[in-house]
Image (cartoon, rainbow, N blue to C red; front, side, top):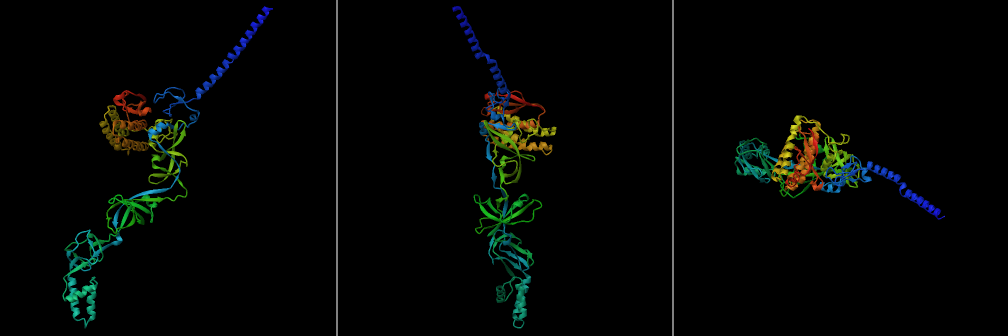
Length: 573
């Protein structure tokens, strides 16, 4: 009996063991298969990126090709990002000094800048002429600028005709009782020469003719032109002086043909006079010349000014500003000029969208309306409330191009994410090759830690850029060169302000990025050129440069870390 009980106990233990084994391990294969399946699914869909370079995206874990850091998985929200969007981290935004603004309606007014000159008011200009034919015996006022008063003697004239007329008057006076008509006719002859009644009576009281007769000023003012010289013989009515009253003057502004429709009589203008720094004057346009100058294609806008204190002199140069409302029926979208990139007929802005790892930027083409001086009206392409880049636009565009996203030079549908390549002729290549040669010399100076030589090479690069003559280029190449020259010259202005080599090296990063874009697009070399990368430059953000040699010689650290870096790509000829 005891033996049977033992058998049952053993059987029970065995069954219990099998049951526990099944519970603990029996479903393991199914769970493991499910887990493997889920893991496999996650691996296939997972995207990996770099925390410092969000533009890096790979389908498997590894190291960042830019800085070497471990890649991290992208969140579900970031997976849904538009493939055309370029992402910058918050740290990168600060380093690039990128500023944005919300797009909204603005006042559609245009600031028109004009230049002009102070002129004499033609209505207050008088030509003093002689009313007596004869020879000028003496000029009492003999230089321009001299002030004269009305009635002041300006000159004396010897006139045989006047002597004869005076003698006729004296003879007629002797018989005026019997022939008053003759006496009156003799007096009238003198009156026709602007001889006053007092002067006639003086002749009669003297009883003899005056051989030198004075010419008096008909008006008061300043002599602006001396039109005769002593000894000249003048016929009646010929001019001697030009006299102007300078209590009121004109400012005549040049108005270019393109601005004529925006200026009208009554427009308010603020202006300053170069000879009176620190002062601002206000006036109103009271006349616009209806005729254009055929040679200069400008018309004249006139502003009248009071000048009783005589501080303002004719001939002074003036600059003015007219704020002109465009009187749009609806409020227009207005954006700063700094937000717009131009490439031929295309105008481009960058629209910002917030993402989890920083900020995303997308290229957007817009249609511009009227220019408002330092801003533009946007006709199409933007909506109120969108956020656009207004400072650092070129920097964003350079980064976008290097990342292979749609950009100013690489619009959507222009290839598989590469910078737009433009085929140049040998003559066109030789035209821009000197720019790259000077750039490489600048890079070598930084490698050698030679700040003075680097500054010299900056001047050389600038001269070579200015010397590029793209007039004979193909249309697409001209368009590209205009944009490259604009950006390079802007970068050079920053580089030239560097006070030490460390600041110069910081600016060299952006300059090199633009040169790399240019090299990829135009391929000016007849040999391969290397794009090299230092992961530690730019506060561990990394920076690139061009080199004709595969050997690493780091321009960002020089002798301190001469061989730090690697070749990341090669531009073939």
